[in-house]
Amino acid sequence: MIFKAGTTLHFGIARILVFSILLIDLLVDDLPALVSMPAEAFLPRGVLEWLPSAWMSTILQSGFLHGFTLVYGGILLLGLCGIGRAWLVTGLALLGTIFFHGMARGFGGHVNHQELIVLHSLFFFLSSRSFAAASVNALLWKQPSNETDQEVSRLLLRALCFWVLLTYFLIGVARLQTSDWRLYSTNAMTFYALQHSTKWNFWDFSLARDLLHQPLFDLFLRAAFPMATLLELAAPLAVMVRRLVWPIVISLWLFHLSIFLCMNIFFWQNMLLLLLPILGWYADRKWQPTTATGKPMLVFYDAACGLCDGFIRHVAGADKAGLLRFAPLNGVTAKANHIELPEQRTEWTIVVVEDDKVLERSDAVLAILGKTPLWADIADLACIVPRWLRDVIYRKVARWRHLVAIKEDACELPPLEMRRKLLP
Image (cartoon, rainbow, N blue to C red; front, side, top):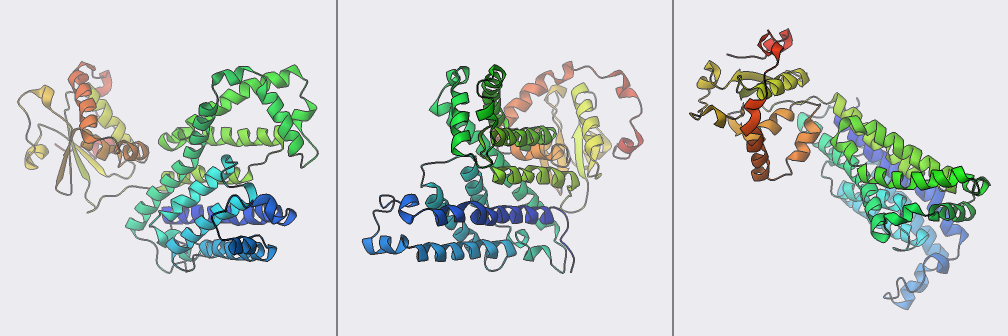
């Protein structure tokens, strides 16, 4: 038996991480909360008053809660090991998580980073169709995964990373909706930190309590609070721009660490879930795009256009897998592929031919970028924009593309790696 390779393995690890976090959260946080409080304290009758009284009496009994805990933990364990139908196990885990978190923390009364990220991550798996790569059991197949599994797993892993980071954005938006920017000019955050450091004094240690009267600490909180909100709003950029993955994830880790030091609130679930964008970043670095038939994609461009020449040189350098071939629009290769050109050169556009399929304008640009690991993320996200709007932007750029001067070295022989990709 061998481990499945590539992004199928990476996506399986991501799913295992989420189910493991839910299991640990059940044992460390939720279960002690249920054991230490009477049932009426965390499940008021008014929450489920629509249920028959006999059912309510059964639910409020400790035996039912303990039994439900075992069932919920068993479902999470099945999901972790990949036993049974994945959609059914994941759906039951989602419902169990909502109900269990509601009992332990209140239904809808308290939603923060922890609940949003855990529930959204689990919701993503409920809508996932890549069950072949979503468990410990599936990671140990006798045959390696095919290319379709690799591509689906890569897209699903990217979607999961986006969901996790999108929850930070939603929390930042919710904070702005419930208050305004004037809140950040007050000392409300200082008293908020003191309140939580007293309420959640798990370790008998709190920077907020010990340093509350220090002017520098108050200044730190005033500056850190709006910066944290801006960081939450910018979190999804880590999926769109690969270079921002590490800075944003490290900043969010420091954000959660400062909350722990100042308020004794430890969002350990979030700090573990932030490993997912790092895993996605690593999977994208290892992923190499392919073509359906194995033939290179033909890219036809205006060789007399300075902007086009710079774009082609950049893309050729980013094409590490050698999936692209380049030829001028008025060359022999273009005529052999029956590329028809308008009489006016200003109307020429980039044309892509792949597997007997012809793409033009923005579709061609996105197809080219999709073959380069450096820009594949942006290309996938840009496909969401309607074609007519993308083409409007493309035509705007095409009108002034000839105004971009060709660099002095554009007439020089290109590097050997690029010359191998040039066709007449």
